[in-house]
Image (cartoon, rainbow over all chains, first blue to last red; front, side):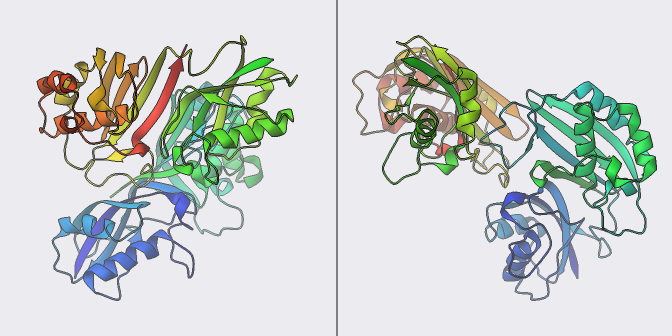
Length: 245
Length: 245
């Protein structure tokens, strides 16, 4: 069977997240439906690099599916785009070896979190960022984020109640950039726990507000205590930027 | 009476344009309603620097209203923002001399038109830009836009059927910038005719496609013939950026 890898952009606002669920609009189900129509195969299964929650956006989600269709690979984006809601865009399609799996073979993921730090926020981009009206001290945030780099047990930075046997993850690269009133937080890692980027971003906001000192971060990570980290920021500021293999 | 000037951002997608119309959601009506509730004055009238069409965005629309309210001017943004839809944000309020009028006193306006020139367009920003999949030659567009600078009769660059006694306008400044797959067209002028920015942008797209040569522009302007200019691009790519007095 052929194995097709898709790179996908979506507007998280319009969906109840990536994962297929009955009676709820979801990205996986929407794209699978389109592929089934195109290939006339009933058993299409689309595996993503990972789920994203309701409201979370992707500029470069990766997912793959197996098919016997003989359609040229470069035709898949336009064929799928013609059949899905406009809030999903397939950006490219590529033929992969049969054993390629979007989730298991993923080496690095990059997420961005966008904060609008102006007094009243934005009307146009309100579903594409998180508004924090209190002035944030970005230079402290830039110091703090460096402590997240490297391999750590991020037990304190996952949604409480979620089980995951192993909460050790490696963060390869971090950055914070400012564009006028906006703060872009970016994290590249081996993988991320449930809500981990939103909790790290919330912790960085506490640093920006002066509630947490940059050099408190190592102790907070070591404690493994969800209570010591910051709040989970809302989904609309989060973007899955890139998945690397 | 006090005269209050507001700077306003709005998401054009959610409204049938700026202008008040019965039974249609519009920006003017929505803000006037909020101001009436706040001031308890029934005869509030909000005058903008100009109307914008359904779908057109503003990052810096200016409008003013007269009131006898004694509320401190700096309280107006938050008070209004609390009462209007989230797709409108008052960014600032300022007290002006009684004779100030947002439309009559306007000296310069700046508009931006955003084109997404990638193959499949964007899912997330689909209501915030115009998608043109054919590769545009930006260097030709940069040559062409310069011909619009200066004082010209823009008769051929207004929606056909609209009357305006005087179609002479002065364009002070133009620019085209490229950010990855996006092309930002900006025009600063003394004022703009109905649909003028969208028609100029459509003409520049024809230049980018090679249908019009950059040095054909002076002749097209001189002809005053709407048929010789390009198409009117759709509203969602257009932003009223700034109004100066």
